[in-house]
Image (tube, rainbow, N blue to C red; front, side):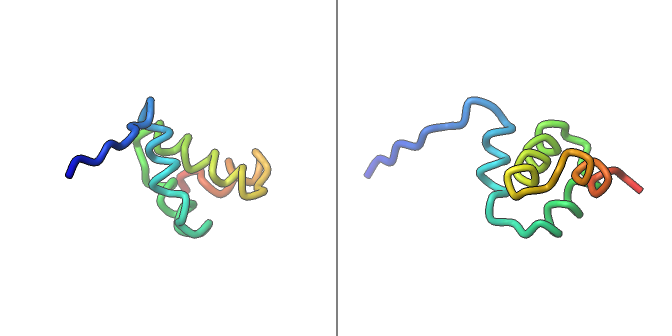
Length: 64
């Protein structure tokens, strides 16, 4: 049986899809240690959708 899946047009969209069910805390922790900019952007976008402001996201996700 063949299954056809639509592939995301770029890595950021794929990451958003993969991370959508992660908790906020898990996303924040993951973002601090990522080097891949597409994954960071995806996480920051998800946090923004969940109600965080741009300033909060930057403060929470900056490598300490």
